[in-house]
Length: 235
Ligand code: ATP
Image 1 (cartoon, protein in one colour):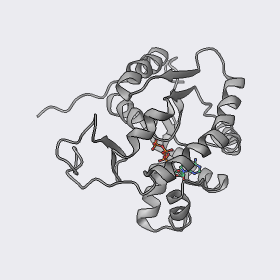
Image 2 (cartoon, rainbow, N blue to C red):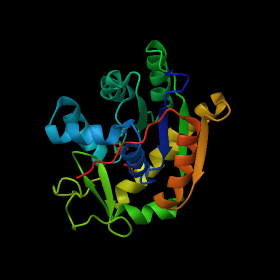
Image 3 (spheres, rainbow, N blue to C red):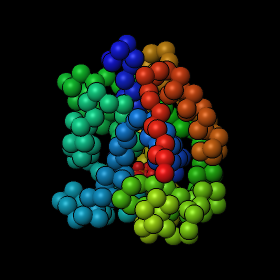
């Protein structure tokens, strides 16, 4: 820990479409926090046609889960660069097996987790959002045509590059992803609650990211006083 302040090493849990990416994006935009999204990493592998990407394409399109060991490699190859920094993992781990693999990895690296956040959004709400969702693939920025539109339809606000629909954002695949959440990810939440200490696990309830954001910011900024706000660029 630097200067007595704790380092933020955070897991973000939530159903598909619960707003993990949106909220992680708000934290990294405002504070000196880095984030790694397993879904974004896989979509980049798929776009670049790597070996992992070729394996992932069909599984992701059908709303299935990649094998734990594959995911561990994809994510931990990025974790090395985050030593000593504040970071968020979004979308990994999402099975009990992945949780145990990650724990072992972090123990070896002497980087224990310091916060687990669970976004609790009702199923009906997220189902209706999925069809409205557009993403900027290179950055993972997420837009919603109902309540978080891009400045220009179809284009990313920051780069002006085109936005894409995710092939797995359709009602059929979404149902499978939600099933996977209940079957594989819920047990992992129980695993973390069982070993949680006071103040290092939080469940946030809400129907929109705007509703959840102040709660999330209070938990994060309230417990990690060493976080720095990014200075806005002038001119
Ligand atoms: P969000 O709506 O917040 O983006 P999501 O759960 O809908 O979350 P991603 O996290 O982007 O979507 O994941 C997309 C797909 O990538 C998953 O449906 C799954 O096929 C695959 N995937 C992502 N992370 C993992 C993981 N940790 N283990 C196995 N498969 C994964």
